[in-house]
Amino acid sequence: MQTINDVMSDISGFLWGWPMMILLLGTHIYLTIRLRFPQRKLWTAIKLSIKKDSQSKGDVSQFGALATSLAATIGTGNIIGVATAVSLGGPGAVFWCWITGVFGIATKYGEGLLAIKYRERRPSGRMLGGPMFALDKGLHAHWLAVLFSVFTAIAAFGIGNTVQANAISENIAILAEGTFNPIYVRVVVGVAIAMLVGLVIFGGIKSIANICTKFVPLMSLFYVLGCIYILCVNHQYIMEAVRLIMSCAFSNQSIVGGAIGSTVMAAARFGIARGLFSNESGMGSAPIVAAAAQTRNPVRQALVSSTGTFWDTVVICAMTGLVIVTSILAYPEIDYQDGGLLTKEAFARIPFVGTPILTVGIITFAFSTILGWCYYGERAVEYLSSHRGVSIYRVFWVGAIVLGSIMSLSLVWNIADIMNALMAIPNLVSLLLLSNVITRETNYYLWGNRLEESSEDLEEDDKS
Image 1 (cartoon, rainbow, N blue to C red):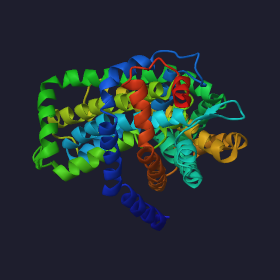
Image 2 (image 1 turned 180 degrees about the horizontal axis):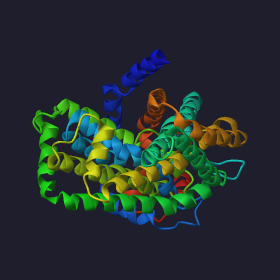
Image 3 (image 1 turned 60 degrees about the horizontal axis):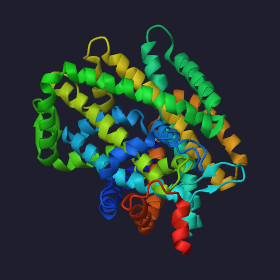
């Protein structure tokens, strides 16, 4: 098993190396320029996200689709992942993580647009779309669509299931340490999570969206308020932290007596990697749920989808980064070599509320990720095998939660990373090769001030 894990680790390291970083970040920048900086319409996008477009085609509201996407995206990577980037790349990694989120808004916009443009109503009555339909209907590359769906269905069990279940069981086991046997705690927690998830997912997308629309805003608000409180406690270090983040992003230096080092290349590498991984822009997961939204034209939902990257990376990851760096400055005795330990130590230094904020944040973020990624995996299976395979997939999904609560995760992480990279490649192909379609729709609806028009209006223009 160790040999297999080492091989998988090497493959994962290759796939998520500089070529993938350049491809993803390059797509972000290319679409940003090609679409004339859709980030300028962020406020419009936020306003659209809370509006109902119930007379339009779709299964759930625009906000329901966004909340489900955020549920899958906002996970332990937003907390522990940022600290890991800082421990490996120095404080400058926070800047590169943030800037990746800013440019990633354009890619998430493009994904959402294609998801609505090429979605279709299935025999089951549900709306289905995503990169597999853009590849199939837009590029006529059915084989790539099949590969994307297979990779998605497999990857979901890693990043969206076992990893998250393990994070929840580990944190609860730590709380119960000294009172109960840790393995018993993990089993009980795994069964409990599986039962709760089962109650939600067997209700379908409407059930998942209903839970996420209530759950995601509350959990995000709790975590953000907790971070604000910690920053208030560390307020005298905020400006110094900002200066340090900016200087380490563009220069080689070390801080805290050399305890944590920083080079420009390391800061960029780990910051970009963590930003790309946390917001999933370009991976192809979020457009799967965007396709279920009730929206009158592709650009409206594209704008709403793009706010997911803003909230996930530009806000939550940035705040986590500030908490970590201010804690580095405030408590120089903390061990900075391990990202997970750095996160725990940084939050634990805040009396009374620090540890609860971290623990509740990890548990709620992980639970919501399980819900969101289950939907992604289900839709991939439905594309491959029609609706019959979905029920079987749900049974395996619930069972994997219990397994993930007690298993060692190094091999699972490596397999998940490989599948995520293999998901991203065909999705990025569709974004780049269909960029003319994205640009055309954007020019018509967004820059032509036609956001209130339905897609039928553009079809009539085509006929005339």
